Image (cartoon, rainbow, N blue to C red):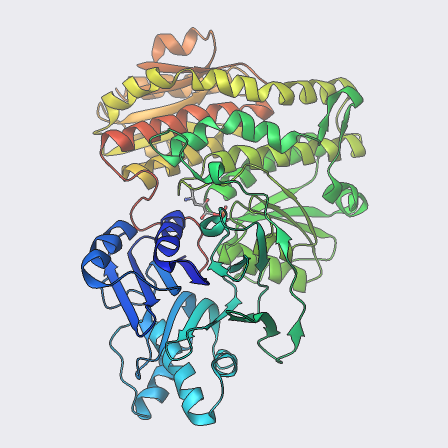
Length: 615
Ligand code: M6R
């Protein structure tokens, strides 16, 4: 949550920070703020609302000149989104200014302590406590800013990425991280600070990603010193070459990132299996699996942990791992798993799935499993993310940046990776016949083209969206491999259109949700030919008898459901195990069009943020 941007160098900081904040708005967009040192004094401008509101305010409020500055886009944790709670926050003296991503859990006791020493607070935030704690250390111990930050952070419990500077020493910025990401871009005599590399990608490809419990002191003409927060030991900076391109984080002519990302799926899936699916040699090559093949083959069970859409991908994997590789799988919400004292053994494998690689609950679940001796495998999209670094081995999805808050290509590429893994393990275990294995490889290779075909129904889906955009409730039904797709379809509709939607296994409908069905209830039923087709057709009959409006997601050429349903959306035929990669496409488009028609902010739905780095 929250996006952080900072600049220290020779350019005007304002445009770099504001443009950077716009790129990080996916991380939170309740409020935005900026602090600039204009050569003589500190100028702070902050407001409830989006970065564009900050820009309008800054026009009136500040000079916008200066080569040092920090900016923030917020997803509120402590204190409602309002002007006062917006970052940056100043210390009582007005000398120190801070922006923060994360949560200081013991902020209240620290605040009481500071109040008893005469400090006053304007906001309800934990961040204002931290900046005053740093100032208090400076006052008490007469130390430089870097040392004061270090001493203060050693008193803090929680998670943070912070950027702080002293207006009396504006040639130095101090940053630190624990549990929230922070990248430092290194240019020629200039430094960029950001929650991810997107704000500085056009200025430099050289970046340092701070590790947890590290802080950096960045000085204008002296470079960077990285230290461990706990023991003050020096860390040698590791400079990475960024692979990211500017085009990847732009809308490329699409109205929304979500639509762009839906349409990117054929390429994203191809990028995911490129170099891994070698059909002519009949092999699947995944180094993270290969290097640990014995562990996988001897595993007692696989536990999958994730949140949101990634959890839905995990549910699809449960079907494919058990079906093809005959490995028992349990799929858990990371947030539940981490707190319920789960039984984990050394011969368990934990697979953590996360697009961002920063989700706090998933990260905590990984740490718990590691502490019990389990082998942990990560599936992430963001290269170098916390989860990617915390796991023993893993596989990247290579989907490219996903900026729309609603996950789309992350879901299909996660399923692609999991499918490759299941096939590789099935082959090694001998639980799949040679012809079945080859058939899977062939079909998987054809999926990107079939996704393209599914996308061709976009206009038809738009017409259906127009009919149902005013619905207040929606039911999504699917069976087997497509039950998780029903959950995912419902989540997509809820999060971007704010229409209440439920996903259910089709057969469960009779055990409760059927009571909801009347002539006003749209029911989206995934009824592809392979799998439990006849059973789902019976479920459709039951809905029809109760006058529910039926939108069937069917295999191309289907006649039976077409006769029963009010509308059908076709997807190309494929294997049942691969069908989620196709059936999810119309559901993404349906949600997208409904949300656009309702005038909702598709890429930045209310109350949400792209990566949930707090629990
Ligand atoms: O980055 P992660 O995959 O760990 O994120 C997990 C969820 O927060 C995420 O999938 C969320 O549910 C999306 N908004 C769904 O579209």
